[in-house]
Length: 184
Image 1: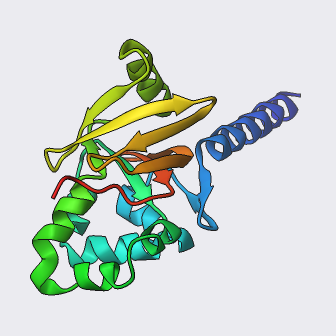
Image 2: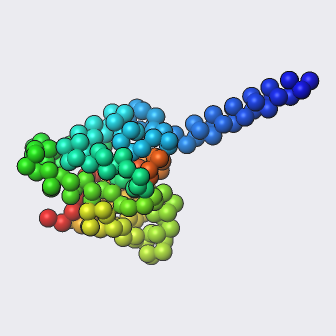
Image 3: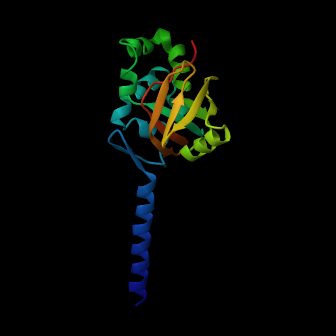
């Protein structure tokens, strides 16, 4: 009887534990993103973020984004990079443009962990807009239209958050559909 009770409890713990863990992961670019892995460990598995990963490597930011953080990263997809004028990505990936690439990439990062709920609270507190300070020293403006959340960059470009709250061991990723650009 005790064995049966123990097995029942063990089975329920396993089922609820696995369900709980599965709810915390999200699919991005055909890969499961695990909250116990860091930003880089997860990003390298996303088929939608190969350009971003290549850019992070070219900018020597891998070690930084594997660091303790926490970070909030607005991660542009390959399609977002494809919206840039032809040749832009190739030019940015050249060693002589490393500083510019670092500025653009760190413009997508906010210090601290901001979930979509945190950003929504900041938007509400700011009467419809929230100003977010980036690691590069620039600002992003978050706002809502209906149930969708958007980020506007310093040049007036708009990016929609397409997948929110992809939790990482050192922060959170929000997938965006457009590359955000700082003032020149």
